[in-house]
Image (cartoon, rainbow, N blue to C red; front, side):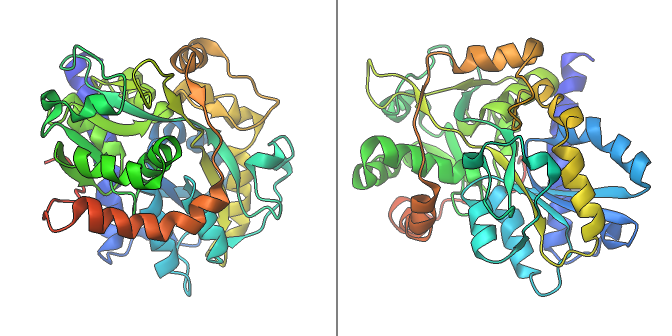
Length: 361
């Protein structure tokens, strides 16, 4: 595939799931909810993995897997709207939205046999959710445009990036909330929001989900965005997009810093096809599928599956020298509503800036 075609493929891969999600969110009925289908609501970024592994499941089980892709918070919000009459069976999303789904009673505890090789810290004790694909929060640049890679958060405030920064809405995207999590962890809450208010002077807009920021980076509509390591490496290598994941330091001379931001999986309570939903979770957490996670630059959730192969080595190289900090997700859940309101009030304010861009313009 040449660069032009692969670029188009990357664009289509991002755009088609967004259109499907938009159809659902506007009330159009999808055939996904037939008895012979299992419905997966998923955060964006894992499209290539699903494309590679789901045909075998569909053939074996004789059911179709219908996927609705959107931002991490958006898929949880949709499931919450449908709580009294669920339309989906399986949920894949990022923290803290998986914890939000658990606390809201959206998830049915299910102790998959394949959760046993997932560390206790990476799953809910009652089986409500488990880590599916390990990952790291990152930023990304277009390396064809940005010749002097930013090293610190302060670098993004330079005039070179005026109108060229975008990040996803923390209310609807896990990677967007991660911007607040990382800055507050490094700077303290008040200084972090002061920083984000300054950064807003360089921000062009904010997106509802994170995946399409990669397309906008590649098209040079923006120069810097937030993302996550798995999605950014996958889009660069397999989507033909011009982007490079980076990690920022709190101060000049400091270590670039990030934290784990895994995709987690859970069974939706009262879903229309729970039996097949359980089978889909078992399959996605199997050694067979987990061994393919490094192919899309993810880190297997199971301790008995190695981060191996050329792409696994690329992940190791990308994270080498980066400082990893722990995140207290219970604290994040306690702060999430206040942080979201403060972001909308103090950072966005009365600017009228777009905060729910839903597709590349």
